[in-house]
Image 1 (cartoon, one colour):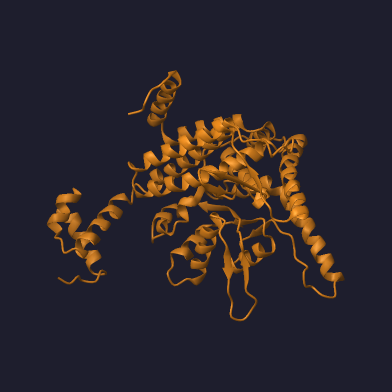
Image 2 (cartoon, helix red, strand yellow):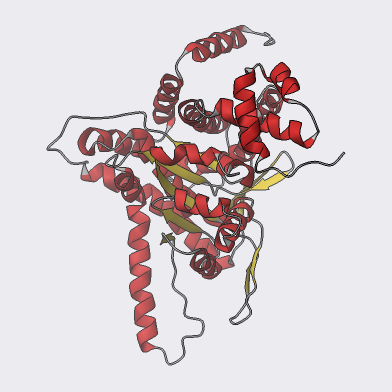
Length: 437
């Protein structure tokens, strides 16, 4: 039962009760609306105008913008809180059907940084053409698209502050991860899991040079067709630890009205200016002092708010099934990363990043974290419900066979009928080694 200390607790209780009774998509839409109201006007304006004039779903562009800021920040900023050090790198994936303008959202959000990549490439080609020796000539690069894992790691080793991975169909990588015979899948998994926690990545080769990334910072923007979503929960993909680190975005908004208008040049300029301000701050720091992160600090009230939120997540874990239990554990990490992002987003206009993180910023980050939880629940509700019986019953039967239990005992504890249990039992028994007494 919720503890009530004041009128604010009563209001929170009422809102939570309303939310519990709402369909998940309505909850997500409510959260999305609140987030857009709290974001700086240069961001909310581009989301609204892109929806009105280019029919880009608001939630798609929001995730794409967060990805762009995550990549622009890089290792230049960190936050120490609750005994942990975190950076702002996050993994995003947009889910939709063909024609849902997923790519357009990503392109619009990342265009300002892509311009820098294009200029860097031109400078790199010029230096190569003029140099007698190519040693020490590296291409500065913010993004890499649909690459091999070897290319991604090598590019990151040359661009140590961050690397943004753009993956047009993320399911292909996830499928390779679930294939025990795929060495590339295993390397992708290690790269993402190590990178999410900003750990070192070491690449050892027999025939070419070895290298090491002392502190990694990959960010990810992937897209997936909704038809592939059920496979996320199959073939051991959940156990990889990668799925529950992804902030998924389902399609929530749709505009079917064509418009002859375009996004205002002023709106585009204001958005671009904020993102580029952040990237320039990072560049100046990198050129002057190397990879030394600016430590962002919380006010006392912001620190308390964060601590209460994480404690609440821990308390909720005890009543969650395995899938949401694991996702909840990653939310306890992602909230730190999102707080950094929210702070940077709120201060790009004036470049005053070194100010203390406020409780309002923490509240915005919590709202964003909960928004992605709701999206994850939507995925489960829409794609896992049809598989639930098979997954749960198969797990019970595998346990029973392994421990010399009978079909009758499975029927008694599972509430499935004898015929269903027998059919699943025979199928599993053909592929599971017999146990010894």
